[in-house]
Length: 457
Image 1 (tube, one colour):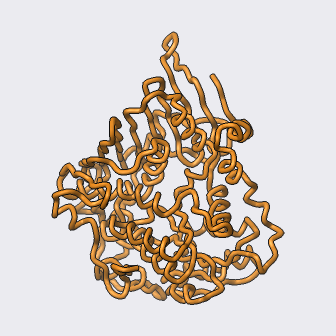
Image 2: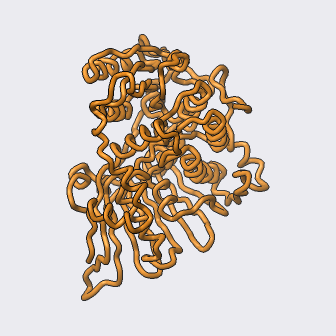
Image 3: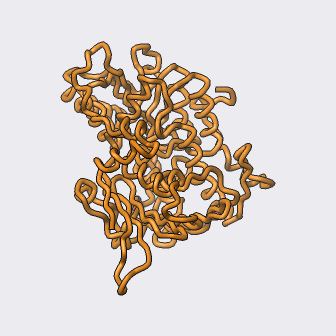
């Protein structure tokens, strides 16, 4: 058995064509603490909810970033984030409900978009058109068409857009990708992607009501269809089609992106998905997206499957202790594993620091691990790559085009699911679904004025 650690990977990379990229990512993300004030990157936090907390903390810890705005239609939430920012940087950011005020400020270099999913693309396009760079959380798109528009806006305005797919900045994943490219697994013909979690998002149906005080529901609802405030919909928006694509989009987008990158694939030829809300009662819960879902993607001589369960308390995510130490998850009951089957071996990879192992034929009925590498949580590396890209103007590791292509896999699967499991054929040149008018109706959603992505960005 061969184990590779972080230092060994760097040394090997120098001789394997990975050196420059790998060493760039491995630069100490805290090395910029002495950055002069005038050289610091000025940020605006767009969306001040849960994910914003980790992003804000991470960028401020670097020492070369400063926040000028905290933007959220929920004023109490924006005030809370602004206080955290002020405590860390010594100066309070301006609090606004509508982030377009930050876009009008020429001193702002970039936005950090941690909004609900249905706002990701619009915030990115508007920011690019305003001359701002963007770090946008996953999944970067809510439908296929708006991903195309994001790419156009980024390229037209020569903007850096980093999607929140941190796995692309993880050294252990770079090594796994190189391992596969070097043919050490042999020819790969099957990949299984898993997203299996304990029950979550159990929001009971409640009547519509007035929104809480100092919360601008109109802005929060944004481009989604007109709807009165509903407390359960607001809390469990991940399970509502108008706001999200379910957990295949929310959490599983990390694994799907990592698998697509490791495998080196672009567009599937066909997509099929089926499932339902089997473990919970959709009549009593405010939930539309499936809690059980399977998708199949057909590539050239490669079949990729995706499996989702949201009812399994015995299958757990990789915890922080595993990620911070030299150990691996218990793969059989790991929520977010990826299994890659080659003619020479089977690789199991984990996201966000889970590491990877390659298994070959068992000996004396015991598993044989041929190669492996431990992982670490790549959030600091991903932020480092974003900041370096802002300064160098080189495309980041999780460029918007890459994020868009990953989200296409998600949206194609959901379109198939919503059409009762129709098998979809994909045109790689247009990204359209071939000879299926019903499917193409779900390729792009309707936008509610003034929260609109224009045809010409």
